Image (cartoon, rainbow, N blue to C red):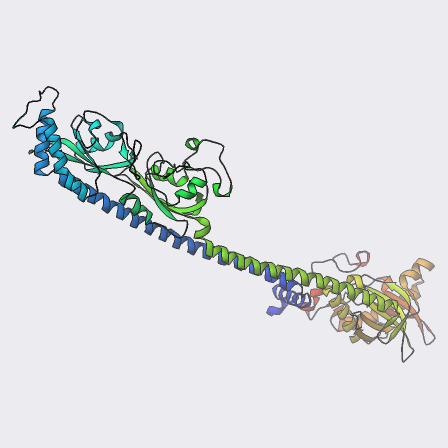
Length: 582
């Protein structure tokens, strides 16, 4: 067998014929194909963009944290240098000696406690000015403040806000604290004295000659200066920013969008209102920029997914999108800095990060919509064209004119065709014209119709109906002309007159067998022999001249591939007259 003879070959061939004839299917196939390609391309683009965005966010976060760590290192180095200065240590030793609980203040070398503290102020003043430190404090091993720029702190012990960094310094570690609200009156950015001003400290241990920690030196830093400025350098586009937050999810740096946050109600509408120590990184549950407002207090809302993961001590990134503190879908990268007990995050709005993809999707869906509309238009046009064509075909039949044949009367109808008695316009010869039923015209019916004509025209036996002509009208009506038979079919004969004599039955069957013998000699099997397809006629004065009709279901034994019009697995023929094995 050749490939064309296989079932696959026949299926592909029939599919090709169908696609050629059904033009309207092409736009639909194009829409489906474009959808598949578009989804595949979109997936590839999204994957590439996500990888690029993830790399960009992670790189920016790495740069920011590296800059912060360098700044922290510089602050720690400066504090350690000052804490271990010879003059400072000497003054601290004297102060510690005079401030012991059981000691009595006695001027030594003319120095009182006030004198020592005054000398400490003078000793540290140049360093404070040179390194942008605002104030200082010195604590002994019991965490009691023994000297400070803010005199109201002197004598206080175990101050909660200072406990974390003083304890670490007394344990021998130089550290930088997380920004916190001051408990003493300090000047804010406008020069006004008030409590609650954001502040942070770098704290270093003070050691004696035996390298034992005897106290701690704390130097105050204004977080809105270098600390916040370093973080605000990490911005991407118009919505991106880098910020820091503490273990409670509270901002410890300023956001670059404080004005917008005031409009959203996330910050109080006050002069110089800032996000540092005011805004919490919590998920409102919806996009507040689109008018959403949560029904819970801010402190009752859960942390954003980013903040919760960072506070748990993890580092990560997310480019699939999550809600930020304003409820806007964002992408970002984050990291927890255990040395300073704070987290750092870099975020940008999802819509801005994937704006190129949105433009591409708008373009794709625009083209897709146009193609879909075109497909619908072509489909509708095809339906209208088919409808008008059917109406034209019916009009042609109603006009009683098919090609060169004038129709006279309807003789009968079969499974797929209608037979009319007609006359040739020129020859005036009575003719039977068989036409495809207009409502049943399809590729399969047309193929069977053509095969019936082609096969019947090959047969020359006088007992086989003769074919005169085959064609199609301008309106698309397929027809073929055959000899007109004015007799009676065998089915009607038996129904009307009952069983026939053996001699007449033998005479009829001999003629039927003669017709079928010729067909079998050519490798053709009729497959629908029944009384209704056997006509008895009078020809040249001879009665009972048989004509075998309807070769539309013929099967070719030599050309199996031509049987595609009637599948081997389908029921073919008239059941009451089929052989048992069929």
